[in-house]
Length: 94
Figure 1 (cartoon, rainbow, N blue to C red):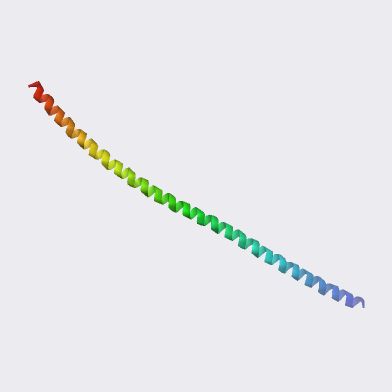
Figure 2 (cartoon, rainbow, N blue to C red; figure 1 turned 90 degrees about the vertical axis):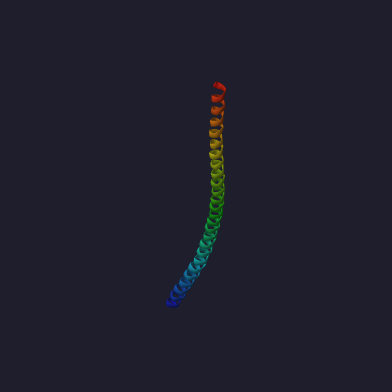
């Protein structure tokens, strides 16, 4: 009788241990999946932010190039205007 109680207790302990392990394993898997989903969501948001910044930088580069071209044209125009003014001053001196 004592042997039967010992065997039954051992089997019950093994079953209890297995079910506890199984339940905790499922909980760990769910927790890990939730954490992975959060990380992926954050990475997606960062990716979208980086893409937006790239588009803004390209737009700014175009604007700077346009302003640079306009400055070059204004400098050329000012140079020509100074030449004309110098020519007018020479004519007045004569």
